[in-house]
Each structure stands twice: as C-alpha cells, then as structure tokens.
Length: 143
Image (cartoon, rainbow, N blue to C red; front, side, top):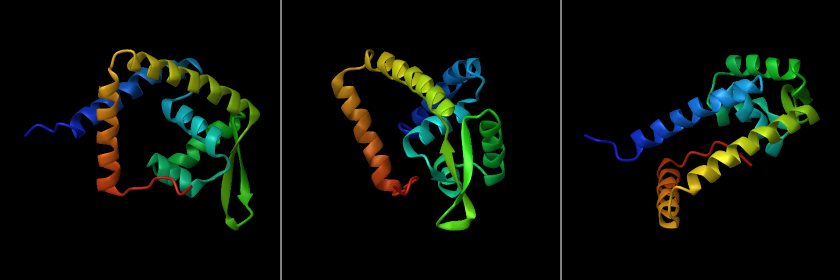
C-alpha cells in the first residue's frame, strides 16, 4: 500500500534537513540549532517545556543544545518569574543576527521551490497541510 501523503512529507522533511545541514554547518550550527534560533527570534522568551514540545526532543538532549547555544553567546536562560522551578530561554542580539542569516537561507530555499510550482499546486499543498492539522488536532505551540 502506497502512502500518498505521509511518505512524501517525510521524504521532503528529510531532504530539507540534509540540504540545510551543509548550510548551517558553515555557520557553525546543526540544523536543529538553527531551527531553535529562528524559533526564538520570533517567540523569545520561551519556556524549556514549550521548546521541548515544539521540537519533539528529550529534555536532556535539549539541555545540551541550550548549553551549546548559551556558550556560543546565542541564547541565555533566566529563571521563569511565573514558576521559579523552570527557566525561560531568551535569544541574544548575536543569536538574533545569526537567526536572521538562517531565515534568509530559508527564504531563498522557499523562493526556489515556489518558482517550480504553480499557484494551484501551492493551494493543493496547503489543503493537505490543513487536513493534517484538522485530523491530528496536535498543537505544538501554546501561543
């Protein structure tokens, strides 16, 4: 039985990850590091709990990632004033600048893809993504 939607979505996700890996490595980051920075650029400060849910990785793995970003001066943790047992993650100016460079890479990739598809194809893709959203009812971000 062929999977008309899930297999191609998984393949495309993996292809994008491999493609971006080389480009983010040139910046001294992993694709996940870059993804976290671009997320923080939009949603900083964010709780570690929210970040773990959005990125779908174990908290111990995420703590190591945050240690690297903090050591490089891209992010910093502060105690959450609403819950002193948890932390908030903030992006630094240096991290925001790097996230901007990554966002430009993503926009270039997006533009290259858009040039290869028709408007009706984009609408069809968006319909598939809405269906996934409606069927799964999974919300990765609270805000």
